Length: 552
Ligand code: BGC
Image (cartoon, rainbow, N blue to C red):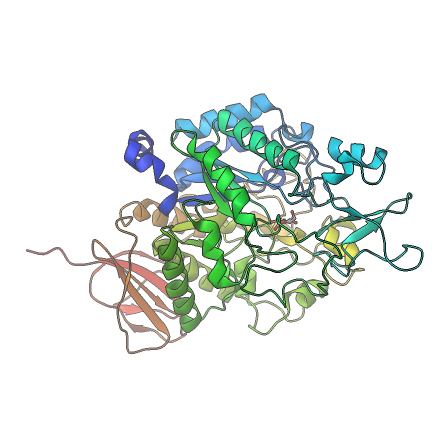
């Protein structure tokens, strides 16, 4: 705690706090419910700031908490400058920021610029206005094709299944790369550009420290006529910056303007891009003249495999260095199967099919999954750069794979005609205690049902238990503050392809045994280990941090 408060007061460190931060992602509806309505809320987050400070995170990233009909879990925003009434008020938001800042925790908000919701006043105005009007120009409206205009304007696809176009009663179509309740904005429109800068300032003026930028690669589109064909989402994405929809070079002009906004504050506000681009182009979003940082999802996609981890780490560090940024690391978030469950399954399993079987085919080996997850996390936390943690991973939560279909909320379920269950299984509310209707999440049942086994993962069941996953995270985050020297690592050769070993400045060593047989532990003082050590061997599927023996 003392370290955090000091960090916040040192101006030099202040501006660079994000470079090696641990950022904890909160999905507000599923974190803590303060008023018993079954939905997590902002006062719930504020009530748990002490927990987050004890955990040792540097920042929280709040997934959208804005007014929304929840057609896409809050990523369909009605009003970018307000709080959803069921989650609280702007005064609650201010109280949350004040409580976080008081203990040295920064606050990052989620900005969703590719699309609004269909309840946004701009979209209502566009629907009430005629084709060709200024109101429609804020979005992407087009006439249809075919003799009577009854075919979509192009072959573009929605990420959630089906075409990216919906037709209106007046015959025009509008574009939505996600659900039909998420109309895409036209970023060639100057009013759209200006309005988002107003939103950035609105939150910065309320004390927000940074932004996570949703779908950052899709804002600039080639809308010249005729619209270009793009019958796949990402398969054909190239590296020339001239795809009709994604990762176009012009998108960076938008972020250069945003950078001017960020830099008009002291300290400058930070941002991290969620950008699905070819790996070698991702760093363009992370330039200091742009958003400053970009998510690398490569570890989240990698198997629990030494060679894959080493390749990803080497590549991501080099890419970040190329543009003067720091790397990011992620193992879980609100869009993917939790990594404990992913590691519990054979590597060739199709996770969508597994979810369709309610997590029964094949049956996950949850003990192995958690053991690997702990090893992978400890490795990740030793790397230079920022680690993004997803709420509940510090409890070792697994994916809730058997949610009844009647409970599913993700639009993916319907838009894929019930062939993909979607992302609800990683959004199930957290268990805080072993008892109650929602295990301490709130005073009544939670909006998504929690499985009976969740009580074993509750915070109260793990706090103070030295071998629990919660205590492992706490200890690792405490020690991590000491190893954050220069953003460098050096690989140490191991003569064993299943063992990765690197050293950070200051003599901090991280060794991971990805194999199942134990190996000899390198020399040094063991500081933390993902599996309890019983002798001088490093068990299989285990990570340890060591420091060198003190020199005489
Ligand atoms: C968010 C998703 C969301 C999508 C559309 C993303 O990548 O992380 O949760 O569904 O953007 O806004």
